[in-house]
Amino acid sequence: MKKILVVDDAQLNRELLYDILKDDYIVDMAGDGEETLEKLRAYHRETAALLLDLRMPKMDGFAVIEEMKRNNWIKKIPILIISGEDAIEIENQCFELGASDFIHKPFVHSIVKNRVKNAIELFTCKNQLEQTVEKQARTLKKQYQIIQMQAEKLREAKPFNRLMMEYRSAIVEVETKLKVLNEEFSQEYNRNPFESIKSRLKSPESIYEKMERKGFPVTVESIRENLADVAGLRVICSFPDDIYRLADLFIKQDDIILIRRKDYIKNPKPNGYRSLHLILDVPIFLSEGKKYMKVEVQFRTIAMDFWASLEHKLKYKKDVGDTDEIVEQLKSCADSIERLDYQMQEIRNKIDQSRV
Image (cartoon, rainbow, N blue to C red; front, side, top):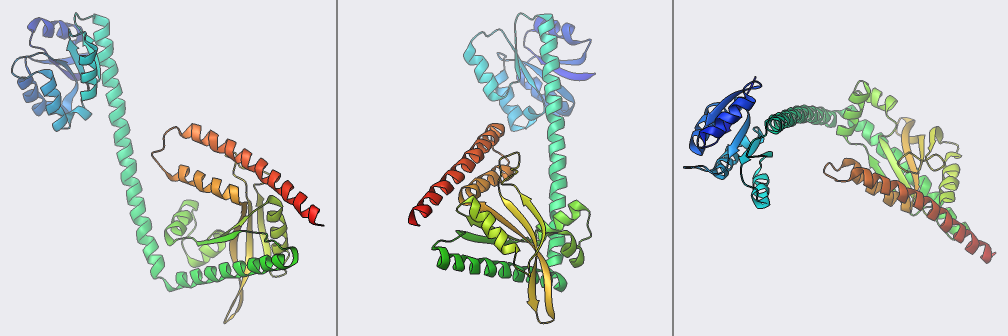
């Protein structure tokens, strides 16, 4: 049986509450605030709930609550105010101080039992949830420390640094090929097929975490074999047809090997994301000869790139409210972006045709 503490300067009220609750709880009693704090100091860890009167000699209920807050007991013990006060202001003041519920005098047997039961169950669930979250936080912190430690070992390993150099070289090769195509389009058609190129190399932490998560050994050969996105480029185009034209021209080059193609423009993700993803084998030329490296290249429009950056913030920011509503708004925006991209493309085509 859980232990509860009933506090009221009127003996009759204490006895009434004792009779109501004695079959379900171990009921201890106190007649004023000072006695209450003495008992809480002795067994606050065992106290499942506090039924607290407001108007008492020596120390009133408000002072008890303040002391409980100072000792951090209020986070573990639900406080149910027992009072004859009917003023809304008093109830609001109690709730603002941290009280869980209000039991009005004269006592109604069923209401007292249910409110005490509900308050204890709610706090029990809350405390269990907090403990679970704390445990998960400790586990995540430990995992993060392991990742950091292993990532540092990778950074210090000469074969890993050699691998990263090769991936950087592959990024340079892709950028060069794309810039040559861009220059040719500029000369032949008086416009550019893309607006910008952004590149990134996966960090040692991200590499280690992904290899561990997928169950692969964390070795240079395993990274080379099993990860396709260590080297990545994002090509930002003005119009959807530029994406397909540029991608087709790029993969037709005789030294580029297409490994995998994912078209999220024609087949958008459920959240509305639209982009063309290519996994490629790209040649790099080293002193010992030619070697192929995997590179991921993503093609998307300017508007979709802006959308993706916003969606990324939502995904990794933990304290965002109304997440479901924001997700729905983002999906609607993605659909609007698609319509706008194709409308702008149509306008551009009309302008180009008028020049012929």
